[in-house]
Length: 606
Image (cartoon, rainbow, N blue to C red):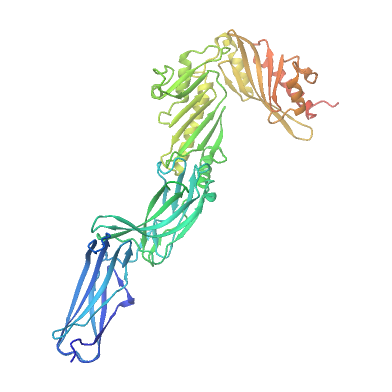
């Protein structure tokens, strides 16, 4: 009889694995070569332990803890005969039991220990390492859109959208990435990495990155602001998310800007990694980000208010009465932000609104109270413009800036209103509401210029002519700016032989000297019907009107050519009826068509 009985052990598990949260019905098989007398008990224990090392060479820096210990004992009767003996056992496995884990100087071990208790000899024993599987999940997809923090980078904003933060082992993290403001930034690539980190809760709660799987996206793919899709495969053996209070394992998607020099900024998006076989329902395509998303939003805005979509970064642009408005995508850090520009015919007030500086003393009496503490209004009218009362200027400024108290900044001159607004979120509804707000602002600017009550004043010296100026503007669907006065947007057009159409657009502006009207100027836009370049150069070089333009001498004292597409026509003298200057513009249009060797369809046969 030997003091060490020969006995082999085997542990049979259903499906070959242990599932956390379920009852384990296993079998211990003893293989006895020779009969073993006085075998008293068969002992089994399911033990889960965690350990973490803190670097002491003598091993004293290792912290250990037992997470789970489930003993099982089966009494035996006397002699254990030769052959195989199968004994079932049952262990209730808790749902939080983690799988085996090997991290950075830390780990979790699951062990089944078996011992045959023999009272007269050394007890035969064995250990087995079962495969523990975290419960499979059946969860809903959790899409997310994340932007980098303002401190991430001085120029670059990174936008990442994911189909779901619930993902499965041996599956993919799918999404899209886009960069804003990256055109002038220096970087080599954007790195996307799945990072698993263990937190040693049983000791110092220190975090230890352990597992990484990454993909690299070159700078050339993202610098244009385009939506770049990605799919990052998760290895089948990548540890899932688990928490047990001893060693917790978290998974994140790390987004890093590889700047090649210095510190590489990064941010993370929490991920819940489920065990293989889990089901994530409701997955669809990831939200579009970057300039592609801007185009989708721009389409919704344009459709809502009747504007046209612009070229990036302009979202939309269009006209509202005499004004031209555009909305420009201009994010401030992670917050969506837009710049709004509203252009209008010059009102000749000589105003400029700018932020207040340290050297500015006091407040401007022409500003509304809501803006007086942040801005300064400069007022420098041109000497040949009729005097405008301060009350009228203050009323105009208050009206065009109404509702902009919370704007990021405001810019105002004689012909332009600009401001920047933070958008609460980047949903279609938020941007559509913004578009309607901009249209309302443009209408208010138009009203501040044109309204007979509450609008800009007409010069007192020619008050009797006001109705005539209003009528002329209305006849041509143009805009009356009362200060000088002037009329912007008078259009002449003609049909040519052959069916083509030619047109020009002009602004009629009165000229004043010593508070008395002394003449007018026609500022003519010829972009639709340019002057021949040779003729434009000839007029530019001549001191007076050249012979080629002699037919215009009856109407204008001077013709100034700024280029083939812009001309100023000056006429001396004053007429109370502004229509008296129309024949001069019509004569210029006829001369222009003749200079271009073009003939109107209604011209008499020659």
